Image (tube, rainbow, N blue to C red; front, side, top):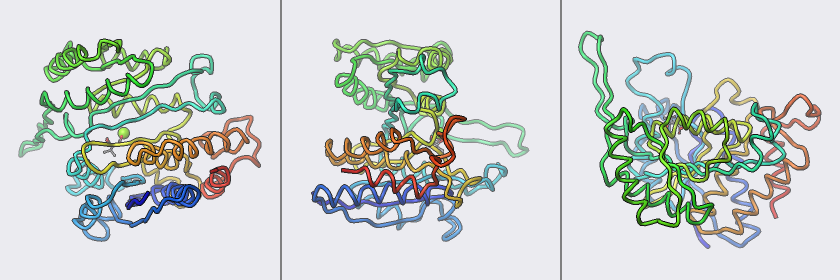
Length: 357
Ligand code: IPM
Ligand code: MG
């Protein structure tokens, strides 16, 4: 198989971690006889520094022309503490999602047994958890009209959804539920929000096409609570952009660390694969970041964009074996981890590569 992959390292630890996602893809290419060619582009703070634009036209063109994109992370503390900045790194990510029509963000909560004790939740609550989030990604309050009055005493963000936006992601989520445990929980705030009432109505309609899937509707506040109380009760979770953003950060703690979770953003064209963690400037450039989320994002690319299930499995197995052998980065180590088993980004990446069959 021949594929063109675009690497966008982005900001902070994005640079370090995508190196390892890419190396794993190269290794898979060699082992399985695929021709993966790589190009690179800039986005985020890095792109603002170089061009003044968080998503330069050149990056967007390369993205559209590629078969899949591996992205690192976005953001810089400089902007976090300056809410008045007009140009912001995150605008690059939001724009590329919109331009590529990446309306479905899949965030699997993949739990490795070896990391049961890395979570702050009790192992017996966690064991057996397997959740796949479908977060809507190109609508909601993220893209609605924004306003601020002249004397800075009022601001608003419009939360809006079109029926077709709910329909298309709902279908994807129901299709996925069919291949899993056939349970779907749609999360909204229909007791308060009109957008949520439309959301619920549409999901109820689509559910009729999937009588074999058990559908449940839950309010976001309750879902946030149930997720830590009894995460095993969830199979596929379908939710809107903002709710999904918050809920998946919470869910990352089930997997032990933000450093473990990969995500796939898909629509009708090129797929976009990225860790759910941020740019973590506090540890950037120090060889401390966990490369596993980037490596697992590469596995999602192989599976979802290229349909290479065996190759994807080879990557997740390599991660599982690395963990089984006791290797940890700092974020997934605990008080019982021997110091000699705690590795830097590069050493952890090399371990995974050794295990890729
Ligand atoms: C995510 C991130 C982004 C989001 C930010 C960086 C814009 O938190 O991908 O979850 O809110 O979507
Ligand atoms: Mg987020």
